[in-house]
Amino acid sequence: MAAITEEQVETVRALVAAVPPGRVSTYGDIAGAAGLPSARIVGWIMRTDSSDLPWHRVITASGRPAPHLASRQLERLRAEGVLAEDGRVPLRRYRHTF
Image 1 (cartoon, rainbow, N blue to C red):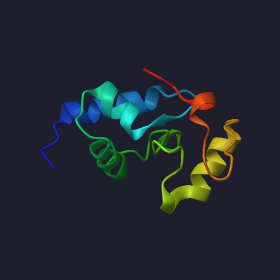
Image 2: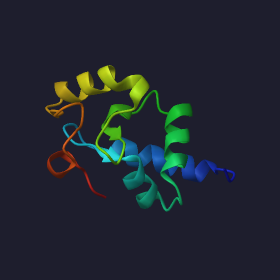
Image 3: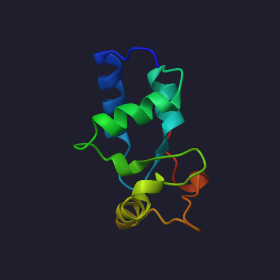
Image 4: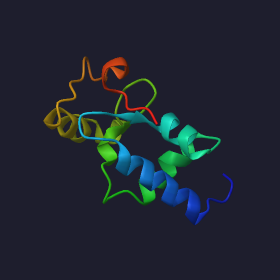
């Protein structure tokens, strides 16, 4: 993976913080809005620097939460009114676009 700049980290953090309650964005949505070439970069940033962000509002392109956080993430989303169907968030209904 290419070196990630502090500016890129801050851009991703700002975008994640901008996802409103009751909505979700995908790692790819965030990458596109940040001008990053890969959703994996967003995943790396989220894994290393997102404890103070609404991390639960960022999901995979399939609408599924991160496997290792699935129950916790879906519980937080449910508390905000985002209802999953068979473990998947319907993006047409809940997706936040930038």
